[in-house]
Every structure is written in structure tokens, then in C-alpha cells.
Length: 79
Image (cartoon, rainbow, N blue to C red; front, side, top):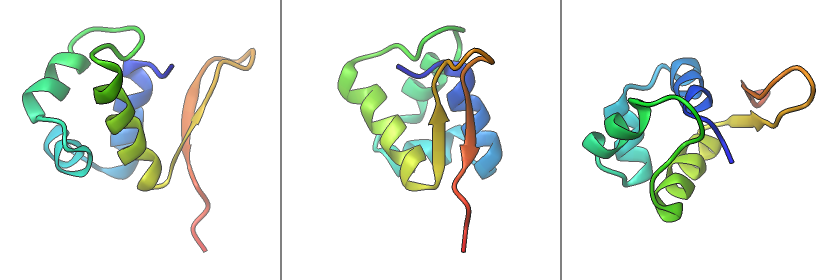
């Protein structure tokens, strides 16, 4: 499970708007805006959150799970 903060941080690292994420994931921009409007775990239908996560991971985002220092995101090393 990823959090809304992780999604927002991932978009910031990629310099993506909500519209960019919508295009990449196939999820509507209003749905992304609604999901990002609350803090906590990324809500919505399982298929929706899976599409969002997959689009961000395909763009090079790595989601870091809770590891004692808190969850986060980073970008894959580009060669």
C-alpha cells in the first residue's frame, strides 16, 4: 500500500502534473485530484491505485516501504 504523500512526492520528482499522471495511468485527472485531496493511504478502487502505482514505477519511481525511517520514494538510477 502506498500513501498519497508518496504519490505526490513521486509526481514532484518526475515533474509531472496530475494531468501527466492521468495520461500515463489511464485514470482520469478528476479522480487523481480527488484521491490526492486527502492524506493517508492511497484510496480508490484497487484497480485505480494499481494503475497509478504502475505508471509511476514505469517512469522510474521506486516506492520505499516503512523501514523505521518512514515510507518514501526515489528514482531509479539512470544509466
